[in-house]
Every structure is written in structure tokens, then in C-alpha cells.
Length: 381
Image (cartoon, rainbow, N blue to C red; front, side):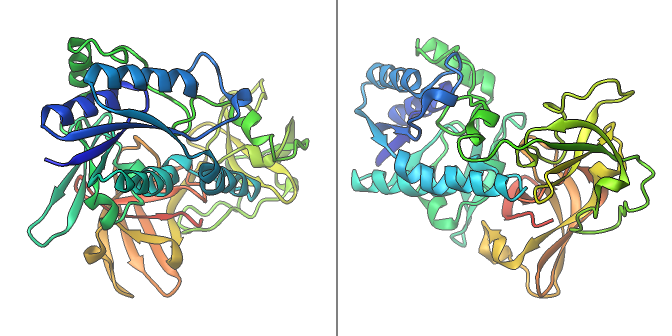
């Protein structure tokens, strides 16, 4: 039995995780991370940090464990928020939740836990950790595959996994809810957070407009028979120009949009919904196409720069020229699909067995061996 610091977020998952650790006899401490200080862009009805911290306190009192709030807002701004602004400004699609786990929950938060004499930090993630005989920690999908959150932890390393516990990883969400209700925890029926990690639900355009300029530009529709589409190309951006299509509307800034986005275009009168197929932040142009089957949405593969390749299990890393069949996803809850990776002098090329929709630079691609996550990387193109 050990001292364990639990990241109590004010939600049902971390609440039950804390309970299970207490039941196992651990010396448990509950910490709530305050990562954001500007409530002007938060939807008040969707669990702002004050309500969440109060719920976390009530859970700690119910479980009879020590509790405190730790303010990480300054580091969070530097490591997560500034990264978000820079990525959107450059026309890339960031994933702050992946970075939050790597930089905050399992780095800064872990450091705070170690200062308190803890050997581990625990969270309410739906993932499972195992240790093989050769001393390698494995990050496996949660038992509830509909809630599996391994993708969000795809940037963790072996040392971070060594100090991590995931008490509810072998449970179904329904079991977690039922247990919380039987314990009369205040979070038992609380809906899951849909926002940025430990902030709450955020109006993303409002959030981005704190630093990114509102600038009107053209929405250009590209016909599906445009000759520039090459569905066999790997990591290649479409070389589109406004002359290749027809202006069908206006937007308030190309950096506010991402590949595959449908909402927020405000263009009607089309036979099928419009989807973003490319953005040009230099010329401030958004390119769109009708329907989910538009060729502009499809890619046959992606590239990852060498500096951005990360192996959760370093012993699985490939050497130059090596090739491997893998399972891949580049979005949370995206079904795993078959692909092949190849290491070359510039980095990694991943070729999909079947074309995939809405691959966006800046996203994290995570690769698996069956249900075990073995590595990830930032999509270059």
C-alpha cells in the first residue's frame, strides 16, 4: 500500500477512482487542479471550475481523505494555451487534451504529488496499465471500449506510466455510475465534461479571439472533379487557389477552422452539407466541398517528422528502412483502422489500407498493437 494523489476533477470517474484506492488501503490525497482563471469564455451552465472544485471537495469529505486545490494556471497558459494559439494561428489543428496529459497531469501534477511523499498519481481515465516481465509498462485500452481514453495518453513515457494508476480502467461506465450512486457521491449523476481539460466547456471561437484576429475572408467551394486531387499522395496538402472554385460565402478567420469541420460555415442552399477540405491562413481562404464522400476530405496516408515521433514503448521503435503493419487512429473514439508505417530519413510515412477522412496537420496519430498503444506522433501533413 502506498500514498497516492488522485486528480479529483469534480467528475464521477475520478471520484470512483479515489474510492477504489481508499478501499484498497492506500493513503489517498485528493488534489484539484485549477488550470484556468478567465471565466469570460466558459459556458456557466457546463461546470466551471468553481463548481467542479466544490464537488471534488464534497467527494473528498465523503471519502474522508485530505483535499486541496493547486493552482497551475500560469504553467497551463505557457504549456497548453500558448501552444493552442500558435497552432491555430499557423492553420494547424492542436489537441490540447493530449498535451495536457503529457505536460500537466503527468508532469507538473506528478511533481506536486512527489513533493507530498506520494509514489503514484491516479486519474479517472478509462485505460489499463500492465507491467511485463521485461520491465516494460504497457498502456492498454480500457475495458469499456466505448469510453477508451488511451488516445489522450498517447504521449506518455515509461517513467510517467511507472507513477500512474488508472483504478477504473477495468470497469464499464455503467458500473462506475452505479457504484457512485451506491456510495451517494454528489458526482454520481453529473454529466461528463465536454470541454478542454480541467477548464469546462468553452466557446472555442471566443477563446481563440482573445489573441487571434477576426479577419473576413472567402469561403471557396471546390467541385469533386477538380483535377488536383491525388488520393495516393502521402502527406501532401492540396495546392488550391481561389480560382479553382467558386466563392460561396464569407468567414471571420481561416485560423478558426479545421479540416473536416462542418459547423460554423453558415452557407446554405446546397444539395449536401459543406465540409472544410483545406485552409490557407496566409491568404485567409477556406476551401470546402459538398458531402462526406468529397475527394478533398480523403487521404491515403500521412507523414510525421522524425523529431515528432514518440514511442510509448521504446523497445518497439523501428530502425531506418523498417516497415510494420499497425492499427491507427488520429481522433478520439475513431475506430482503429489498418495501416503500414515506414521509417525513412525524414521521419515516418504511414499508408492507410483504406482512405480516411479529415486528416489534419497538428493532430496526434496514435498507433497500436491490437489494443495496446505503442507510439504516437504529430501529423505533419
